[in-house]
Length: 543
Image (tube, rainbow, N blue to C red):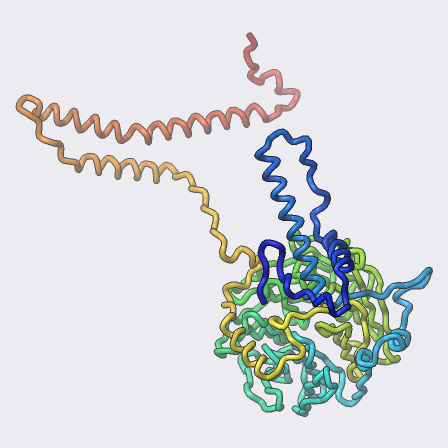
């Protein structure tokens, strides 16, 4: 698809007018309405400007702003056809009082299929994970049940029984491979249920996370050891002792690939695979951390503690934005920023609907009595929340949680096997090295600022001066004519050269001594003496 640079982009993708679907007036009015959203406020008033050059530059700049707003409006209209929406209550009605039965009566048949309960009480509790496209789901029961489900057709692709404890499950780079944290070691399986690898170096793992851009499988075991393993080469990239004891709270920041661990002392530590010390160690709660989650933009973090509070953190300033008195055992952010909170047999959805980073109650759902929720996970590109609990797993509808428009280059829920193979090769070529994981990835590719030159001390200055004098003494003087080449004159000439070499060092030393003397005098003047000794203080002369 091409683009016109003068008039905006993608002019040619407009639908034909003669089909009768759109009229020119309707299209222009709709584009003008959408363009207002992208304008940078009101235009500058250029009438009173007398500087013609500045006036012309500002006029060109305002014209560019208008063109970019129109181009963004065209992209939104033709390339982003779907719009996300939230529940809207009428009058005194509250959105968090609307139940799933009421939503099911109003949605289409395909959406209503996403409301279900799978009851397997003998094999629970269950934990869940989705692929990046949201099409496939992996479910793992604590009693050894592993299953891969195609969420589009609602078909079970494969299910196996490993006959030992399974604590966690996570997909690797696509739906063909997944890792399960079992009783003694984590194992990697393919989609057919065949065991491919046993990762004995990881030990008895409690939590697993996969870094998609770096192809790294991260795990934390019972001893509090953090492991990073490259799944393409099998190399163990990092193996660190956290030093904070056992933990089962682990999440990856999607913005920079930093792994965060929540500890029993109320601290959250952030790690990267190339350093053995944490990048950040922050005290978030007075008691143990029970759950944490990252916003998709990577700048917000939600943590919950045993004191029954949820805190929303701004990771750019490392400060608390909001503290919510809610008990939470598990947390998860959706693609649009909704926060799911699971505790006991109740799921609560918090939303920042005003855009002011002030989360309030949006929706709620109560499970059957006795169901203990262990995992909540939003399904990408769908308004669906998956819930793993003690009796199986369930799925409910959360309007406005998923991204309505998917990018087929990033994640395609409808991709074919050929597209999947091409995407796998492309992602391997674009694989990022572990050194690129840092708190601020935008620094990659920038110039490192030059360090300020430290002042040399007295010994270094004397050594530098002696070296300069030795260099001068090693110079052979040119032989002059008769009468000007006497030894006395040659010695005098050498003394002048040595004095000339010493002069800048002596001047610099005298300047530093004067500056230090002034500084000492200033400090002594600032010291206030007690009232009983002020009569002995040196007084300034006044003329």
